[in-house]
Amino acid sequence: MARFFCSIKQQKGVALILVLMLAAVIATVVTVYQYKSKANIGLAQQAKNSLLARAAVESAKEELIYLLQTTPLWAERPNKARLAELELPEKFNFWGTPFTWNNAQVQIFDTASMVPVHPFEPRLWLNFLYRFNVENPDHVVAAIEDWIDADDFLHLNGAEKQDYASEGLPRNGLPQTTDELGLVKGLEKDWSRIGPYVTFMGSHVINYEFAPDALLPVLLGDYRAEQFMKMRNGEENISSDDLMVERSEDMMVYLSRRLKVSIDITIEDAAYRQSFVVIKANSTKRISYVAEKQPGYIGTDFK
Image (cartoon, rainbow, N blue to C red; front, top):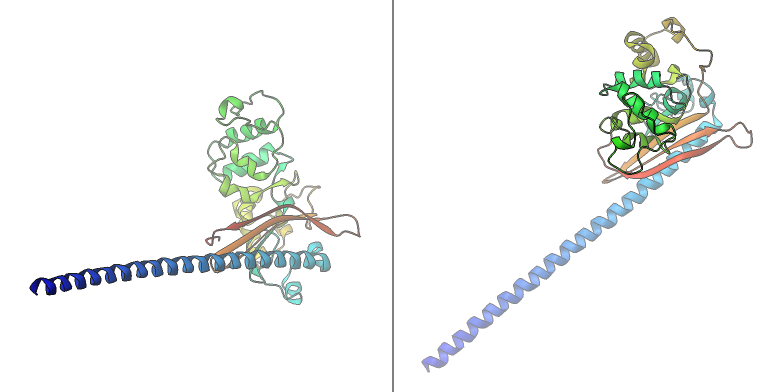
């Protein structure tokens, strides 16, 4: 009899262990399922936000192009009265200072007011690199010249095939994009800082009227650049003529035919940016068209 009760207790103990094990397995399965479900929901939400951000950027781009085509903004310098009339933010500008419009962060550059790759002006680039504290700017300029020219002859302090670890470098021709210059010897670590102020096609004479703030000291010197920025921001009641800056005959007072635009929008954990160049055509049938389009998803820490 004692053995019988002992056997029953043992069976109950084994059954309890089995029940506990089964409960643990079920709990584990439920936990894994909940985790996967939560992850899938998160991925779906992120995908949705990414699509919404991309659609919002496309919408903002079309609205901006329509605005440039149907208003006098492209043909005149922005002023407070005109911006108020068009219900645009006061900080709307064409010299690359970011501003918020239609829930998007927008930057607009006049390419004639940026440092051009084509035409390549060595003196301008030397001053530009020097102002941005690029190490050995004369070596970098020579390396860019070696990158662009079609021969394998080495400029003084330049860089040819023997100076690059990767095969096929330098190109020995014009870069296909501005970002390609980030591969030039001496520019690798500094390209992220100077790249935003470089345009592929520009003018051999930079128009300081619409130049980004960071380029003004390169073009005008420190004092005049400071005064010009105050004038642009409405802090000083002066004109560019009052600064006594010598203006080249080739320098335009108004915007050029090429505007470089960057638009980005962040929706929760998804951010999307598109940069492109809007070109005003001479034909009255086609006011403008888009070139150099570069779309892509970005991190949410863009400033």
